[in-house]
Image (cartoon, rainbow, N blue to C red):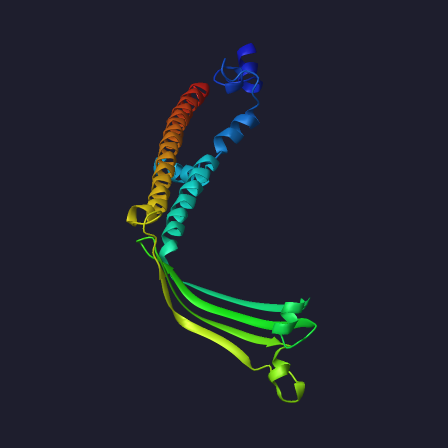
Length: 231
């Protein structure tokens, strides 16, 4: 009778909640655990995610990219540049006796000038600089009234220059080794940054693979224990 009651209303001898591994665990919790779906993630996919999202690795990669841009910036010193300037000048000063005699007895000297510069410049590998440019001065002062009709300013004095100049140092800062030194330094910095990034990537990937293997082993152990609970 007792055995009958136990079979009808009691628990099964293989009830997981009565086994040493499952003692005190509700049936609903075990059922939820069995229904959990595992998303497949291969080792290659996991390593790819780590390389894309690890903050330390991303930081070292950015340092490498910055160093690569430093090489590009160092090489740009030999690129042709356009330089343009415009200057406005206004001056007024009292003349000394000597200056007054030289300036048609004017008590003061007034001038308004406009100066314009435009040029193409390029640094040479020899350490020199090549410049081709145009310069314009628009000059206006009260001395022009002495030569103008009716004592009025003429506003028509201009001075221009167009030509090419070559500046080449003969001793200091001359030669290819000096001009390319900045490029060589930038290249060394880039190589160092790449090796640091490579070392960090190998360390992070190795740790990720180790963690992946440990997790896979832990999942296998959990499966074995779950099977032992069901028995």
